[in-house]
Image (tube, rainbow, N blue to C red; front, side, top):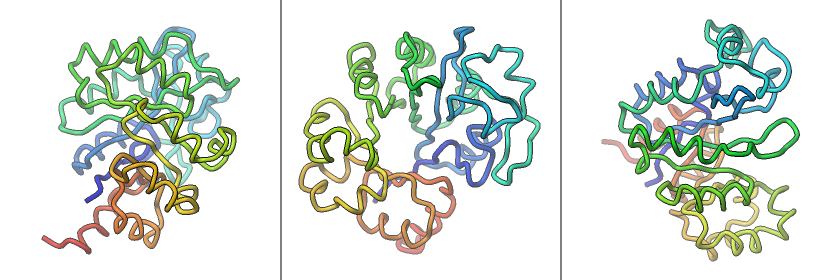
Length: 252
């Protein structure tokens, strides 16, 4: 049976990448939690998806301009767009919430507002995870194959995932060529559900389904389809719904 991954701290249920959302997801006991990390000019690792503040906070401008003080004065937006009484959390603050619980951590290394990876971020993230003894529970991931290669070189004891969607696969010469390029490099390939659906038979021939995850599935019918297929992880913004549908198929 597939495991359940809460995408961006279950952003359809609670504010995306928020301390409150992470507390709720660990309370529900999902198998894994996925979140995103940027590196600021102040050399602080912060947890937020976009390279700019505009969509998920009441601020504007690049994330990298945040300071430890300014990120706390911002307010995050909940699923309904309303502001909540929380700012952008640091990676250290998120790990304070998650590390005491038996949940796997899927840490996405993001790029800056120009699309460039942050120099030195792999080493910084690996250092903080090692200091907390989280190597066996942490998977580092990116869309960027150069970042993934750096993860393998600098942090070989961590799990490694690369993500791909239709547009990214086309840039690499198609999903077949992409999967060939990453064979032996990563433990898991995270595949967008539209690409996975369109190329299911080819992907199934080239890679064990248990070594894939499907993202991001939120519709009931779509979730049921992927539960039946059984990838390693079903990644959702509403992991509560995924669990409910799994329990329908496999009642206790």
